[in-house]
Image 1: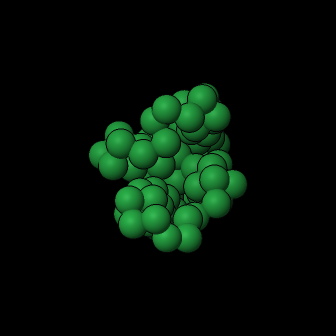
Image 2: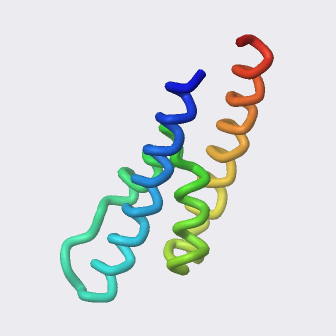
Length: 88
């Protein structure tokens, strides 16, 4: 179970950093992080970090795709962790 917590901590930190970097890149007008990468970071376990990144950096908050998919990923991961706790 410790591996799960470590994985989630790392992937959420990565997602948060990705959203922050993409916002910085957007402001500077440089090459951006693909939306697919940002969303995949959420679905691979970084949904909380992605949601915090969206709010903290005010990034991707007007994109319907992100307003729907990031919360869905967050709910899926919450359910997954609860189920893991019941099994283990």
